[in-house]
Length: 351
Ligand SMILES: NC(=O)c1ccc[n+]([C@@H]2O[C@H](COP(=O)([O-])OP(=O)(O)OC[C@H]3O[C@@H](n4cnc5c(N)ncnc54)[C@H](O)[C@@H]3O)[C@@H](O)[C@H]2O)c1
Ligand SMILES: [Zn+2]
Image (cartoon, rainbow, N blue to C red; front, side):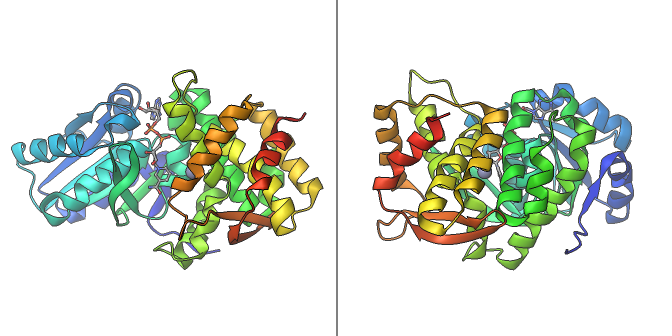
């Protein structure tokens, strides 16, 4: 496995941050938080890192604020507070803060150093790897951005003690995906976890980061192999968008939507990619144990299927999936005949 030299772990990593910053002689250091991480994480950050004289920048929490307006406010604040090219920004928060903060840093004065301290499970196992920075453009997610690695990423599972359990489950879905696309052993060890507590999760977080990094290192610009990370996401994204737009439905978290997507795409994998039905059943049972089954009516299914046409991964009108040949062996660019979509929903709902 490859070594990741800009990731450090635990309180030790946080304690060491000031040793990393000192020799760089930054003219000023800023910490970006959102309204929740300001309340739940900032005190601990200051206490452990002993970085006490940084300027604190605060943005409103939530995906709806991951936009240019927030960036503009932060660029203005940085300018007002005298930030220059030798300043640095530390992003302390979930994927919204690390994506947006990294983008603000990459573009301010043509780029200043930045450090990411992810505080949600999703941002630890997913957003922390691969150097994608960015913001949304209206309802289009992550349309504007850059690819730039932070100076350092610090992963500390203790942040998870204040994270709502729903958010933990959401991040856990990406970890299960890492097992499905890259390692049957990892999948088997994850699926028997009963309680998602921070100390239990730390070792698994490390494995997820390594598995994702291996994929990303081989294909940093998403030309081919990196598409394996999209398993569960073609239908998952359509379901997420549908629930977000539907007035009668409560929003699903990203992980909750891709959990459904992975069961549906396991079914498609059986029919289009050679996955054994026993493996698909194993996937279905594991996800239903953690996430239950969400009732989706036939009308809703049709609307979700219609949304698939807008998927970013489509080329020349064809809907492409990243599926599984078996657990641990993914296959990209699979075209799926439309007739299988509603059967996949039937498979998902049948207990
Ligand atoms: N760059 C990438 O490769 C990549 C990969 C995956 C996801 N993302 C992006 O990440 C975002 C989703 O990330 P997320 O799920 O972390 O969302 P988020 O940043 O909105 O965090 C979820 C919620 O938890 C709160 N929170 C964060 N840390 C907390 C803590 N320790 N205790 C209590 N509350 C806390 C936040 O304020 C927010 O309300 C999306 O915008 C997505 O596009 C990026
Ligand atoms: Zn995802």
